[in-house]
Image 1 (cartoon, rainbow, N blue to C red):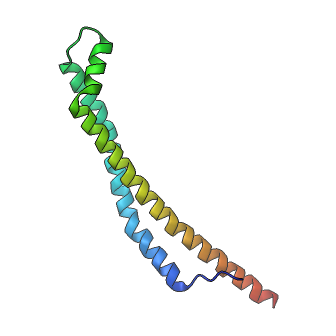
Image 2 (cartoon, helix red, strand yellow; image 1 turned 60 degrees about the horizontal axis):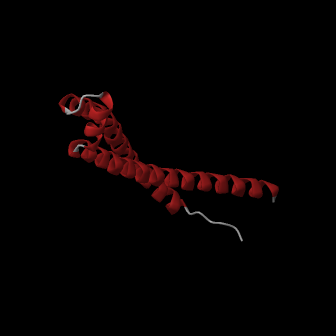
Image 3 (tube, rainbow, N blue to C red; image 1 turned 60 degrees about the vertical axis):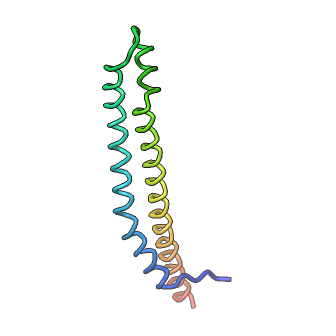
Length: 112
């Protein structure tokens, strides 16, 4: 039983690529920005930290609510990026399937 992918399916996939490309770019940008901000937040909290040793200051900074909020934001940004990435990839795969089926159809037409 041959698989049929209609030109409409291709058009839908291309529309999805157009839709998800900027969403993915924005999500990735937010994640990278939060990764860098996490380092800055840790450094500023480290300076505020109570404790006499580096380990105590680091533990205080990691446990601080502000740092935990950054980690939560980073988690959400990573989830958003991953969803957008796979939506984009799925649309790209649909285009690849369409291309392959078109090539197979042309090859079959030459044989007959």
